[in-house]
Image (cartoon, rainbow, N blue to C red; front, side, top):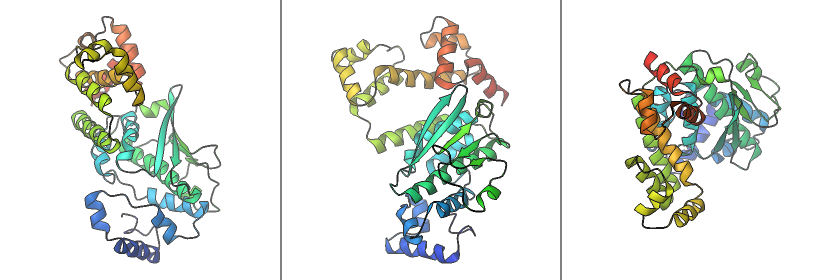
Length: 323
């Protein structure tokens, strides 16, 4: 919608988009109010000869319109994120607003790569969404931290004949890569954002998780186990959960496996969320948090928390206390 109101595309193309919306019984305001997805096929209809070069240029033009408030239910946690790592975490909830692209985070030692894969089954449209997604994320990180010049976008598509390199200087857009991905150095991941609000971020994450579960139709056993773990912190073994559900632990294990998860994964998810929230309370010591989560040894808890989040408990708390 921002693209239609900008000079990024010519007026004829903008009118064609509006004609398509009218034909399909919708409009700009209706799409914004309902947070509906605009089908990628609209781009193929407006640009019937779309190729990778034009798709790259369109992806760049779209990304240049991206604002912190452009992403519906992702906007509040985006603005309130404490670090770039928390911004990256929001990609988990990308399916809430779009199914056009899939992202996969891939830790590389201390750095992070984020693979981008278009789902259109149309090479030019996949090029468009991969370019847009990567460059929009760079633009948003820049706005949140002021200087994230070390974040780079690597595109699996060839460089256009002109324009793209000038639009994204400093070698931040690199073409002819094996895959489309973002590279985020460790020092950038831990960079503090400008408008941190831990409470708003945590509330928004909870809402996003619920929205994602509703969208995906979270299987019943997974939902029930996670709810029990969140409500009853003292329950920490699969046997105790199985007893609550009046079934054997092997039956519960099989049901969770059939739903694509495990008790260990669900317990870790519950514990890391509880740990983050408790660490935000300055009246609670790190040792107290460790004990509450069942760790009698502070060192073991610190190792576990860093494995879960990429940051030690003291570093996580220090960043939030400083802000």
